[in-house]
Length: 389
Image 1: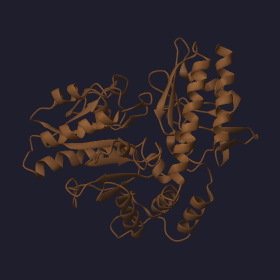
Image 2: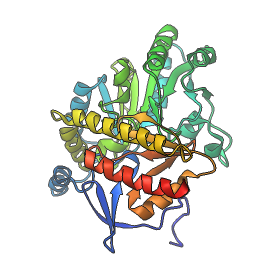
Image 3: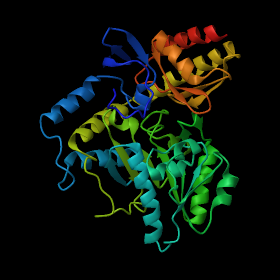
Image 4: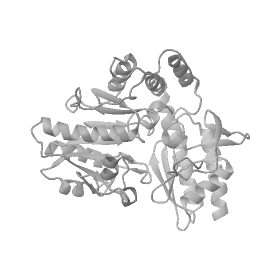
């Protein structure tokens, strides 16, 4: 561990294997996984369809680079476009890369349309868009920027959910608006349909691109392929990752035809869209788009939402509220209870959750959970809540 750069403060847990919605340590302890690698392992662990897809591809070819055609890219791009708003897809390795690509799209789109002075992007307070220099500047959070000045130019933030502030922030230099339909790291804050629809209207009025960060809330997490679909809004750009590969590193930048301005030499990646990633992404989409799958997500999400509301009502001195969308739920804790300490106690009970901003515990289970798994998780949370109460 001495040689490992200390960028994390991990729990003293190491998992040897996973099966479905459970993880197991080398000494045989079992944990119910309601973190899913922070919304990544959307089909749980060692899903037979995903395992078989990767095995089959691994025996053929792993990497060729984008100097050559990769048929899996073409197929997966067509499938994503057919299932969404998009006309064009660029594959990368992570959410931060997808957001970097989005920022480049916004600037080039305006330049190509005769507005080179338009380069600035209006984002929101409490946002999280990645850890690169540009994406921490887009989020604007002091804790992310500390030590990494000067801050990359071209971003400002307004209050999340406030259309008046968003409109007032637009200038002759504004190129795009960037918003998470559901803020994840910020504490599980879903945007209203009216807000997202209002953003579309503002972008249309001023000639801006509407860009959604669906790295965490996309790929079925809220009960639709993308969270913005609940509002009936068509964006110009969507960045997604996490669940798209089911645990294999994969990100994607989706655009309309008009916003698909990146051409030869404008952007690229060595590993992005490699055959292994395409096999994993295709296998995830097989399951995600299967008849009845998202119906199941919505049904079990309703069970979870109701159970969390009951839990909050039962322990009003421990919890403030439950909030979220689909299987992206959060519970806000009362001060002085600290979410990371509560999380550690839950690990002692055999339940894995993720902390978030605003003293929230995030529940991001695999999309394959059942009502029985919900009951098991809520019982374990209740055990820890009772110790505080």
